[in-house]
Image 1 (cartoon, rainbow, N blue to C red):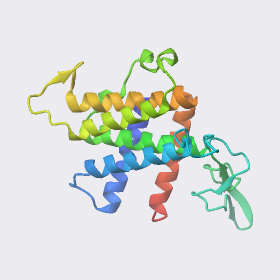
Image 2: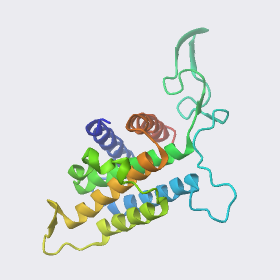
Image 3: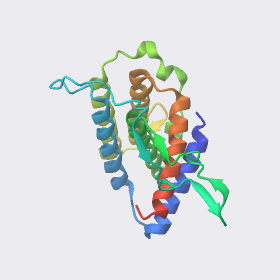
Length: 219
């Protein structure tokens, strides 16, 4: 997964939103933490593993028959000029709809906000992790435990006061907690639900296009 490219793409999206919404000079960190928490809850809702009260606990993953109108072209993917076809929508490859994996889509929404927080806080280095930190043999399958740990670390990264500049593993305390939240998040997606880094990367690219289109469409 080309993390450097994703960071650059997130910076471009964030800068566009700031410019077009007139948010220059505003501290958006707290809002972005809330947004990430919301997306994580939506991801869990699609994952359904924790719903012990329900007979339907299968994750909402891939629905090949469920179609959504493409947000970029609004269902009109073929471009005409003087009655002749001159192009098609790249986002849906000219079909006007896109098939989707709700669980993966919610996961990459989380990726967007993790990246955005890292950029705002200048914590980009915390996003680069070691392969062994995603070792499937180290994943015990306890999705609820991992999810609660992730939210604990995420809250700590915002709330913890680092008055004495204490460092852990070469990172300031807040950034270290953020790094742990990110690692735990990736483990949930990759080892918990079987997402590949390529799937995450490609899904991010697709959703990033949609997020730019939403700015055009007044989302």
